[in-house]
Image (cartoon, rainbow, N blue to C red; front, top):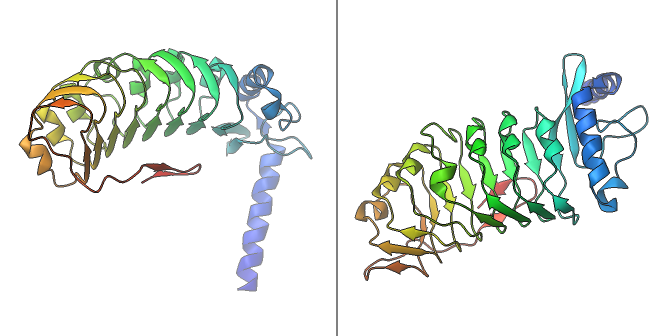
Length: 278
């Protein structure tokens, strides 16, 4: 047991040593320093030195995770949340091409999400919840083939779902889609049926209209569907109540015809800092 523990410690030390000796890709160093220059003191005071992955005795910057690729280090995660960042979305983030997680939730970011976000082809988690972002969601987000969790709830975003998922092959890996508490309009497009891995669709408190498309029945793993407090009309497709995976269906605060009923125990969504679960 002691030998195994010592070997693990040695391996960990050697890994950290190899990371320390590697240089960080200049592209990532430039991007993070541009972001550093645009952020407030709450973040900057913890970002010491010029290399976000650490340099010599200096540790990696707070909220920055790096990985080794060949002879270089790259930034793979950026988590800077709940530190009252004020100002437009930092476009330099879109130059961190190896990001798998971007979490800037609970700040005061303003303006639109730049279309260059579509460059982050390795992104799996994108959390921009609880900011002051405006304008339409760029359809380039749908080009992220690996994105599994997308949360822009509680902003001031506009536009329609149809514009976001207008292509039949967008969001192939998406499991969780949080668009609640915005100013989205329009209806539920048939293209939702193409999101074959979708489990959570959270559209509460928007300005969406029209009937509930029966194509939602063809989303095979749909488990939680939140449509409440919009202006949806018509009837709920009977087949949706018989969906084998659907546990929760919120429909309150709409204009459905009599007979529409919610489904499930109406649990409260819980989002943790490290993982996104119910």
